[in-house]
Amino acid sequence: MSRYLAIVDGSGKTWGVVIPDFPGCHGGGATPEAAVADATRALREFAADMTADREAIPVPSSWDKITAVAKREGYSGGFVYVPLLLDKMRPVRANISLDAGLLEQIDRAAAEHGLTRSAFLASAALEKIVAGGR
Image (tube, rainbow, N blue to C red; front, top):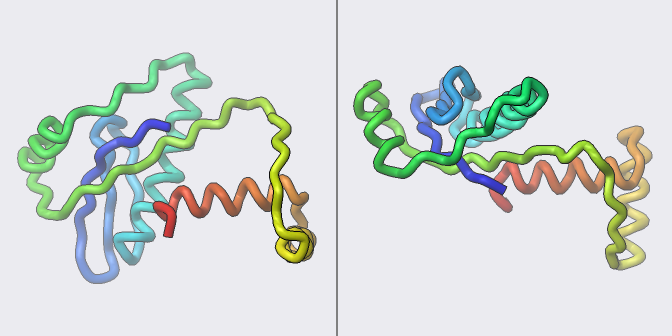
């Protein structure tokens, strides 16, 4: 999984994240965390469109290059790494072991959300990755 250095800028209830390696790709939210999560989703969609159009996914730029962009563009916020989570467009079976009680809770929650066990686990894993493991 590649990670791209992004610029976080804003204050109060207006935050934005710009990903210089992907011009036009950005996220926003009421908090820095929400903006980063939105940027992560945006990057995933942006890169999927690029892949569908047979465009090359850029190699992540260096810290020096991105900080120079931030300075040149007048951003005063901080920096964060945004993961690129690209689907391979093919399912793969995986054998995992979980506590029986946890599996029952997963199945109940999946049913409540109208999802299969696999879809529920995939969405939960994606949320955890986007949140940076928190």
